[in-house]
Image (cartoon, rainbow, N blue to C red; front, top):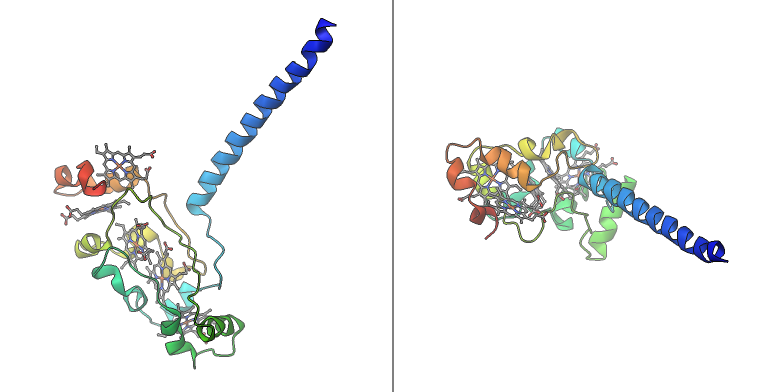
Length: 176
Ligand code: HEC
Ligand code: HEC
Ligand code: HEC
Ligand code: HEC
Ligand code: HEC
């Protein structure tokens, strides 16, 4: 009688442990996958094609030098070229569809810091760092993806190498 009464509890315990293990493993693989896997974009945007056609990064990411965000070009800007360039390609017809519906293309962010971190492109570009230093060789990517996990250790490892490291490791620089 006792053994029979205990059996369900043992199974509950085993099931409980199994669930915890599954959650931990899934959580871990999700968090590592999120760091680097390229997100599914609404339109396949081939950086390599446009960069090799000679369009500079700053032509599209115009705000890098004047505001904290680099900015993603508007669909109007895409159509400035694509009304004529490759206009019949299926991907461009998708772009034209957004333009006609006056909808912004819902690009999925590849790199995003938590809200409690302050980051601005401007001081970094002004200090002479190029885009590739942090984003990898985007100009040769067919699908844009993160090359590094942008965590605190990553930020600090570079700040530590700067001449004014003492100032740049101050918590208030990034946590304002
Ligand atoms: C300054 C001009 C210019 C701008 C602005 C521009 N593109 Fe392009 N794009 C090109 C050129 C040039 C090509 C190469 C065309 C070819 O290979 O025939 C291209 C190719 C493409 C292709 C591949 C087309 C194919 O053949 O399958 C896609 C998709 C694309 N662009 C999307 C976009 C999107 C989305 C935007 C806006 C965020 C944009 N482009 C902005 C010039 C531009
Ligand atoms: C023709 C316009 C165009 C040009 C030129 C261009 N980009 Fe982009 N970029 C985009 C668009 C549109 C997206 C959003 C879609 C995506 O992430 O693939 C994007 C996304 C990105 C992202 C990811 C942003 C995020 O979500 O975190 C980075 C980083 C980036 N571009 C860097 C560059 C660099 C570096 C260059 C030059 C080598 C460059 N881009 C040239 C249009 C452009
Ligand atoms: C010192 C490292 C660093 C350099 C250099 C750098 N970026 Fe970034 N970039 C970041 C980080 C970190 C984020 C995420 C910012 C956030 O989530 O607030 C980001 C986000 C972006 C984004 C998406 C969000 C936005 O701001 O619109 C684009 C586009 C982008 N970078 C383009 C560029 C381009 C183009 C260059 C070169 C001119 C460049 N980056 C140079 C670190 C860098
Ligand atoms: C590859 C090197 C590198 C990486 C990676 C990097 N930084 Fe920087 N950071 C610099 C340099 C260089 C400066 C400019 C120092 C100066 O002008 O005195 C700077 C300046 C800054 C400033 C302005 C400091 C001030 O006093 O004006 C902030 C804020 C900042 N970084 C935040 C970040 C954050 C947040 C990250 C990570 C998401 C990061 N940085 C990653 C090199 C880097
Ligand atoms: C150069 C930029 C930078 C500096 C300086 C910096 N941090 Fe951070 N910090 C970050 C970034 C980016 C994150 C978010 C990513 C992560 O969790 O690693 C973060 C996250 C954190 C978190 C949350 C960690 C978590 O797991 O959620 C704490 C707490 C923190 N920082 C404390 C500090 C303290 C205390 C200092 C000063 C001794 C400091 N930071 C200096 C960039 C910085």
